[in-house]
Image (cartoon, rainbow, N blue to C red; front, side, top):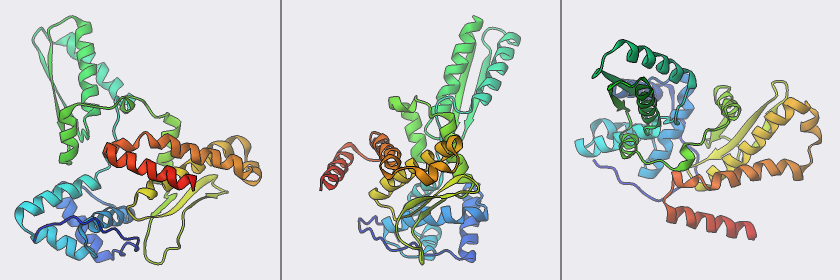
Length: 305
């Protein structure tokens, strides 16, 4: 049986995954990819599978599982590649983790001092994603070797479980914004929200409707609630509420609880709407130009009404 992608999207809730189903998917992913999913990652697996199932017009996890395990060899392999790409985080950037690159730089100095002309260094970027870290290694090694004035050689091997990201890495073409670094403090705040389970994003049976950002006053942390169902508007809602969340975190640190009690609504919406606008010129990462332009026109028309 093959896989057919459908454009019939629905806003119905994602089906709940029971413990037995979760264990089956855990075992399958670990056997084929080495990926291990802890129980607290169950919601992530549910949402990722559900988005892909909706694209295929499937209604339950068991049917999708059976098609991946027993379907026609060629279509099964292609679908597995697509699913793995959806399940991998692919978080990367140029010169990510400065401490790691500092350690590499120290080693390069030692290598160049101890080896003679013609020596070769082989470096391996494990989980290279779209290639930024592998190319960062190449730039660092090239610079350090030139500084020592010896004819030293090197090779970079990049590997990743996601075939689409490897294809991007091979092309080696990156938009200018990929070189721009996210403010470290802002990145840390977002990671803390993910690790603290401060995000309840995916629609599911029995969950109330709507989307909003609230707060956990005693912990001084934000909480984002929404019902993502694989639609374009979900991205905008997430950006909007994230603007509120970062505003809350940064302002509450300097102003205490007074911020949450006295901030006028007109001012509170500045952060959320600004976050939406900041995100607009990043949509090209996910959508082709014509599709993005069409959505922007629709959004603008909707705003004017």
